[in-house]
Length: 200
Image: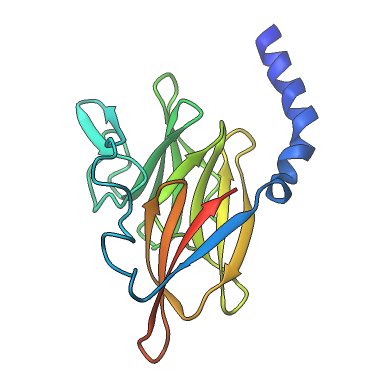
């Protein structure tokens, strides 16, 4: 009973802080020049980076990247898994339902699968955990000409915008990079821009 009470007290005390977490984090956006815009520079992670995976009932899942429709044991077969990541000692999976909407599910070895608060709008599937309780994604901003980072908080089961940045053109691709994302955008005239977005 005491651990449960302590957890509730912690949530009450730190919930206001969590609500303002976006003001404690800044984004560093580094444009990559046209000459540097090569697959090697904009690669998701270095080739020698250890693969991050999660083993679930004999199936090994890559984390933080596109799952390409991989079957996940115990997940509703009507859902198409898009990406998975581990945070707060649990597996979190973003999937698409039959209507095309994105859903978020959490797998805990003790309690199994549970639905969580769905992402507010579309997100790009590359993701990574930050700190002890956040999972970060790239999302088109409702403001024209901008892109934003959005975070899911695993304890409060809420989503919040961390920050945004100016983006020439529509997003063409998003891939994981050390401490952030490599994002490429394409203007209407076909010109491509690349930038490295990291959290500070």
